[in-house]
Image (cartoon, rainbow, N blue to C red):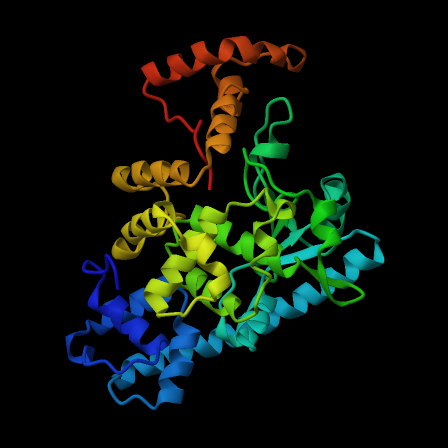
Length: 384
């Protein structure tokens, strides 16, 4: 395994279980850290099932009992989320709002054959941007409350952000309502294009098409530094679904990045010893996919949680650079130009009447310098 010399013994032991490899590492494992890694990487359901199927005798009873407890809790949670998603599907269909599932318990069923083998923290759905208000009304009718409010200047939320979250206080379920697959500034296929390539389970249950689904997963994982092994395990399982690799290199899918797909495939091959289809060689060929895969080891070695804010300075700095390295030349140019567009921070620095917000364009450089000189936190950067 390339560049794995700094991975923990516990991480390598987890991989040996998932890969069904015999291992003599058990006597070197810190079991408390092993459980912490399993929890962080969200792979405890598959670990428990694999340990039971392999009838392994090198796992202490107290560790197995903890994995069993987490596994059973996840079963109930996924059933709970699945029932809620079914209600959302039906409600949106009845109100003639086209909606596609992005992430949730159905991913476990689709990728692993059993929804209990994958964890899911919330439900991600996508609707056309012009239906956001109607979708919010429907969620409100079900008892959901908006959990975050996007600050915006001159309508930048439409392309800088990609979803807004809603929380059900009684059910403790979070729904992320998307109008884009990924945060901007970036190009991606619009809803109509995605809808035309969708897959449907029935009249009211719709998913991204197989090739769009794969690209969505690799872009999501890359944006988070592949800091959780579960995301890479998803890609390994997705390969078995045999997407049309040739089609994914065509103009029809030009909005996506083959280099990022190459990064994911390289990591899957490296960590899970997966034999990649020959059609994927064009994705992994060259130095860039390998370099991006090497860069990702930073996150796996340190068990980094990018949602545990504030990030350490070293991690924050590294992650900004890594996100930038994922961009193509045209995306870097697009990002550079987008920084000239006003940010909400500009409005907070110098409040102006809404009718005068256009003045933030010429004022933005001066306001940015002012904040920097005052030592204020700058968020004018790539978002995850």
